[in-house]
Length: 72
Image 1 (cartoon, rainbow, N blue to C red):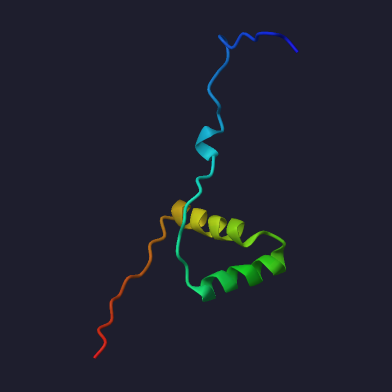
Image 2: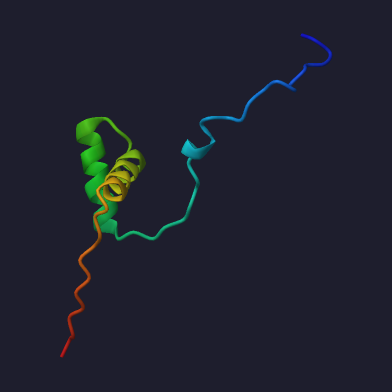
């Protein structure tokens, strides 16, 4: 190893925008169970499946249908 390295010609990290950010999110138990079952079928972690689904929503500009129902 060198004692010093010259980074004056180095560039920015091209993958910095693709880094994942850790967040805390509250999901219903049935949602987690659904993705865990899907993970067992596919061999992909349930967290990755949730991320893939949300990425698909972003790419297709899918928005949730929010219809509020009054309880009487």
